[in-house]
Length: 277
Image (cartoon, rainbow, N blue to C red):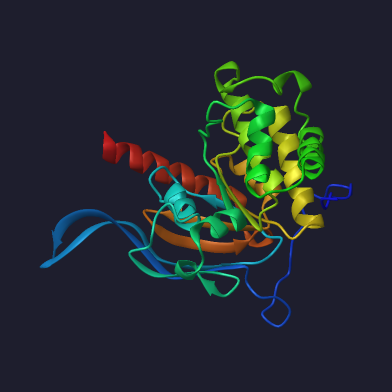
């Protein structure tokens, strides 16, 4: 029987209090830099353009991290590094104290699963796409069906979607199915890139409740890039603020001045648009 998550009340303002004495980081970045491969001449040294610079932080089991910042801040690039779609130019990333380069890439992606904004079903039906990662793991048909059915129910996925293919789904429907496909894997860490960008308000709110409950009842950690600050405020236990590839803040949700942060983000977006104009 697969481990099914118990139904518990949702607590959207849930916060974790971690200390090195009681918990070890499930994910750790140490002085991570990422540069483009395109070389430029900078003070006599050839190097690429900086995308991320000197990024260091720790993530603990059960954390819900919101990663925010203006366009071009490096948010999606950070998620790609954590899923090994990219490799740091320098610095180290650790999963449970094991350096990323020492972990077989397929194993790492089972433990650290990335859901991009535009995910593909590869010609499969919804039912097939949800079951496929579990088929690859060699799970029994009964276990696969039970786990898939569980997440179909939790995410309120209508039964008439199950026989549809990608071209028969809207952008929002594809986005929800991609998230469900990640959840059936039961990874240690889920990376979400703008997971509500194509969802309506009701579906977004329900998804955030389901994800919140998951982190409270199961050893699952979520890092989410989202431009909706109000959503991040109700969801996250910690917040990472990126700007121009640098980590400006790494704060507990309870420490954040959300009004000031919103003003700062608006000013950064205006500045970025003026620079591109």
